[in-house]
Amino acid sequence: MTVHFPFQNSYSALPDSFFARVAPTPVAAPRLIKLNRPLARQLGLDPDMLETPEGAEILAGKTVPAGADPIAMAYAGHQFGNFVPQLGDGRAILLGEVIDRGGLRRDIQLKGSGPTPFSRRGDGRAALGPVLREYIVSEAMFALGIPTTRSLAAVVTGEHVIRETALPGAVLTRVASSHIRVGTFQFFAVRRDTDAIRRLADHVIARHYPDLLHAERPYHGLLAAVVARQANLVARWLLVGFIHGVMNTDNSSISGETIDYGPCAFMDAYNPSQVFSSIDEMGRYAYANQPRIALWNLTRLAECLLPLFSDDQEKAVAEAHDILGAFAETFSDAYQAGLRQKIGLFTTREGDEPLIQDLLDAMAKNQADFTLTFRKLGDAAGDPAADDARAQFMDPAAFDEWAKRWHERTALEPQSAAERQAAMHAVNPMFIPRNHRVEAVIQAAVNDDDYAPFEELVKVLAKPFEDQPDYAAYADPPLPDQRVLQTFCGT
Ligand code: AMP
Ligand code: MG
Image 1: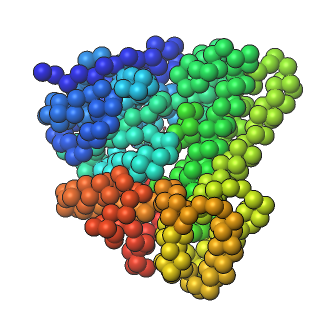
Image 2: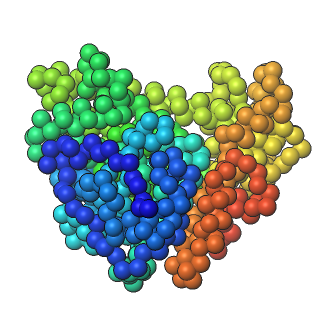
């Protein structure tokens, strides 16, 4: 028996300028530390086979499975606002694509599997810590219902990678509906290769936006569709307190999935200007700045598509401008609707927005925990005596004043207290990947080769909306000395 991947590759059939053919570099002693069995089944793979030594060799890049067509994808990108005409997969190799059980085409990519022609000065490798972080956070995002790339497996390579110190090396197997980024379009735009832009746009439409195949203006439709997906995605991030950390255009997916988990984190206390990434000194990618940056990235995408819009540059710019103009409303509608759900409103009334904003302002002023305030507000909806939400506020009186207005507002709706609580608990998670927990899991794995904390955290985060009383401590914010202030860019 061998491990069978039902590959059906399409990206590697595009012109040679789109990628470099390159095989993963074999590693010394691959050991599987985590396989996502349900995801494997979803992809039409046999989880038992992937758990054999041969499976681990494939997931570490030591053996290339039959049917794979390994490539490193070409892309450019704006990193912290500065344009780099060639980035590309420097430490990732796309093995190929499979059609999953739902009929969706999914990329299977190894991240950390050795150098490629795009590695520049990098070693093409990944350290164990960032691999575990990406595994934990991407799977938590999936469980929260937020569009994201997935993690199929994590493997240690038996080799060290040199960062500030020598660290255990690892490979993550990442699954995405595609790895095409805003930066992929930029790669061809900077080379003025309009044919390639059209080829790429056609590929993206067929793959991600098939409704546009017969549209009158498919490329305009493409920009509008990506704008809509990104606006909705960033709204979802804000509604769970997620900070991506490195929203460069090369980390901005055309399919609208969260991609490239580096120094990302969930906030504990609500603070709109929160930044985690150690390299984001200017706060460019701060929590509340994310919608603005998403629009900035989409504007870069629009620039790439202009030659497909019209030969008349002025007309093309005006059309792009109109399409980008929809971002603000799409984002705001999604964000406000999500917030209304978070405080248990079933209807929309005048005054809802200021009511919600006043809660957020009070939370910021009182360093209230973002996740617990909303989760416990659900309890307060069911039982007015429940005061855990109140307890999140440094000055609980600030909550009382707001809660009075909130109770008056909810009383205008016919739903029962139990119905409201259930609706709130279905959107306000109890468990998020708290940064101090993620760090503790990484320390145990890296320092002690102990993966039990990782397993337990992944298990708890798979059911974020369930109370799970046995694991209640995972819902707790960090104690002052547990607080993680910065998250380092994991490469
Ligand atoms: P990221 O921080 O993952 O968005 O990566 C930005 C760019 O740097 C991409 O082109 C990566 O492929 C490249 N890169 C990051 N880490 C490495 C590494 N260890 N070796 C080679 N290239 C890397
Ligand atoms: Mg990246």
